[in-house]
Image 1 (tube, helix red, strand yellow):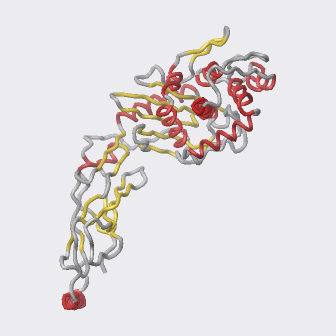
Image 2 (cartoon, one colour):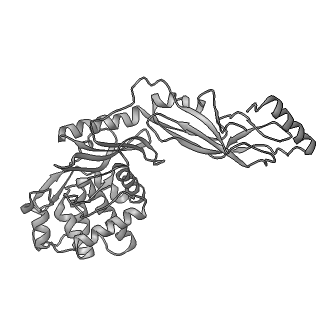
Length: 383
């Protein structure tokens, strides 16, 4: 029998060619943290990033996204007006003591004004007014948020409200928040620009954008969040030298800690983390043994490209192996899948891609099989 796994003796050059990286693999005081490459959606770093967490006001990214979708579908328009209810005022306005747009009962802001209130001012009243105006109640709108999130692949999402105020079971993962940021940026760039606005004024009430990274090079969004139960959080995205990276952090102890760690994470996202694309043409794999074939070995290659991501220091130490689909027995046709290449980078889930035979290997005739069998009995498996 052939061994199932054949270890490559050298790290793939396509992975190793990342330059010198002496820094240690990053840690963070955040309870949840993610760095995502925007173009590919690849997670470069994750600390409990797939675990559901309390997002606080980062919830409002989904509130706004659903409104964008409804505008896109023609169900509502930016110029539609909704009347501010006393309920929205009491639970999200000045009487609530929470972040507010400053709406008053009877006000009739437009959808566009309310979206500015959500995105820039983090107004809980604006969220509730949108929900009540569109779906009749905040609860009904929150159910639509959860449903849409699941449709878009954010399976961890479970929204109980539109504001992110504390509620049992109101959760989403950091990785899904990063995915939501990517969806917003890619699908609705005309609205994403609002996340970069430094301030917004409703009537005579002006508030500055709460994102502490907007003054940092290339940062153009997205949203902060804070509750006593969850700590201080931030989802932020930036572009440098044509590359966009998104970070999510949560569970910091203070606004200052959030700003400091957010800036550090964003800097690390560009300086210390990278991804490499391995194409079938860029790597030469060793031949693998064939049982009962007219040729004893068959050349193999990658069937598709692989994207390897992680800390640059870890990429330099990546390991790889070929895992065969059991013993390869002739006949084998060129193009047949015979196993997979597995590349392991510290701190990342192993990356896999199928490998295929590059040549056809015919089966030995009866006499040849008999000789092969006899040699195996005498000499044992040379694997």
